[in-house]
Each structure stands twice: as structure tokens, then as C-alpha cells.
Length: 385
Ligand SMILES: [Zn+2]
Image 1 (tube, helix red, strand yellow):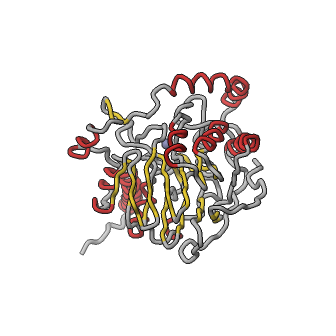
Image 2 (cartoon, helix red, strand yellow):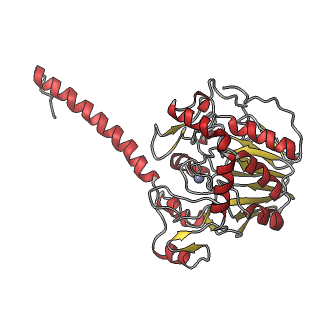
Image 3 (cartoon, protein in one colour):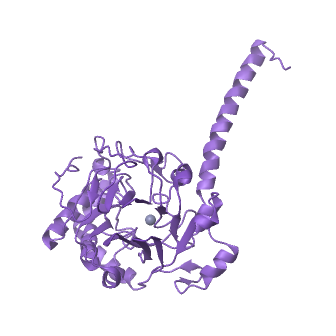
């Protein structure tokens, strides 16, 4: 049996040793999670299959519309003139104070396990995370419940009040659907904690490699290229459709695909834009799969520095028209500040744009169920700094 030397020098050394052990354990725990969260890009046979795809060239996945970079750059440059000086001033003054909400966001407490609805119903959890309940089926899209967006804590933190739902609130999932491998859409800690509830993982092609690295069995992972479909149940079909974006969890970019999704459920059609810049893919999707009863549209984290990766709010409004949306819910806002605009700026600009274009919009509270085909009156709850 060991006995510790209790002399003053040695008890000080023991104390230091214990403290060091705690630090090493904590660092290796977070370090291990951070390293694991990097995932793994496709290699070997999986990469060979990808290299044969028409949308993979020169070692990278390619966007559908190669011309959009020039035209969008021109548009955004023209449009950003009015705000350029304001943005410069904000930059010089540091982050704008309205970047983060001054008080916790309001969230509705909904029982997601025991409540059923007679038509497809969507519950938004902030940013781009939402649950679709259709009949007895549950489909969870881009869940980000760890409270941060990035490979480690302390990266981009969730707004106060926005991270009230997590894995424990989720029902058994018929499908986990991921739009692309960026950290704010594919959250390692969330999927790790959800693992035992997930029956099937549906991802754009290449993203399955991350799940394999994290120990998910290959037989529950379905990888889709654009316009590939999976019949999930008799009444639910999920189709991956194009988006104009990119992917990466490390410095290697575009090694896995990014997508939007068309979900046909119980005779209703729902569109989720994923992360995307504005391009002609919306018109193509509208023509091929639309119109839609509901579209969850990216609306936030735009910036003149990355005008092709995310849409400005007036582009989101145009995209909603392009796909033929009878109702829109803006997403990719309300949880993380990933650009330099005010936390609710995108919603106010989007509301203005869609009101003039006569596109219906609902800005739900976090956790508030919205049933497709219904009309909901709701106050401008987000209108504060
Ligand atoms: Zn992204």
C-alpha cells in the first residue's frame, strides 16, 4: 500500500501534482473531443466513388452555378455602398453592441416526445436546427445543442436563452438530416449524445466519413448526391438538392458535399435551403420540386466579405419566390453571431423585403410548433437589442 510523504515540501509537491493531473485530464478530455470533432474526410474507396461524380472536379466538390461569383459580387458591391461607411465605423469601434441580444431569448416549452400533430409540424431550436414531426415519424435537421459552434468550447457561443433544448428533449429519430459539415450544422457533441436515438443518418455525399470516424455503423448512414432521394417511410421521401456553399471542418475545403433538402411528408412539401449564397439553383429546385407548403430559408450571417456563401435578406426573399414558398420560416439566425450584423438585423430586413413581395413569413419562438398550412399571428418578439 502507498503512503504519501506528509512533509511540507512534499505535500506542496503532491498538491501541485494533483492540480497538474486535473489540468491534464480536463485538457485531454476537451482536447480529445476537439480533435475528434474534426471528423475525417473521405478516403480510399469512398473517395474513389466521389472522384467519379460530375460535381467533383480538381479534388473538390463544385457549385452548380460557376458564374454566380461574378454577378453576386457586383450586386453586393453596389448594394453595400450605403452601409460600407457604417460597417467601417462599426469595425473601428469593435463589434457592434447589437451583435448579441441584451436579454435571454424567449423559448416555448414543448413536449417533443409525447405530442403528435395531424399534419407535418416543425419546431425550430435557433440557428438552423429544427425537428419535423410528420405522422409518427421524427426528423431532426442540423441539430446544434452543445452551446457553441466550432471544434471547442469558447469558440462562437450560443445567445443566452437560445440553447434550452438538447438531446434529452428529442424523441427517437427516424432520421437525422445534415445539410453540410460546418460546425454550426454538424455538431460532434450533439450527434455523439444523440447516437442512441438515431435510426438513420442522411447526409450529403462525403459527410458520412465523419460519422464513420465517430463510430456510427455504416448500415445506418445514407449519403445522397444532389437530386438523390431516400424513401424514409411510406409517406416520407427526402431528397438532397443543390445549395451554393462549401464545406470544411479543417483547412481542407470542399471535400464533402453541401445540400439543401426537399422533404415530402404526408402529401405536403417542405424545403430547407441549407447554407447557401443566392444562385439560379433556387429556380431549378422550384421548377423541379416546388411549389412548397413551407420553406425554411437561410437568413443571417451574411457579409460583404463572403457574399457567395450566405444570402443577404433581400436575396432570401427572392429565393423564397424562386422556389414557390407558400410560407417561410427564416433560419440561420437567433443563436450564433457569425458575422458582424446585429443579432436581429436579418429578420427586420427580411420582413421588409417579403412584405413588399407578398411572401408570407413566420418568425417562431424557439420551441414553438408550427403546423404546415396554418396561419399564426405572432408579435415582433425579436425587436429589441
Ligand atoms: Zn456553412
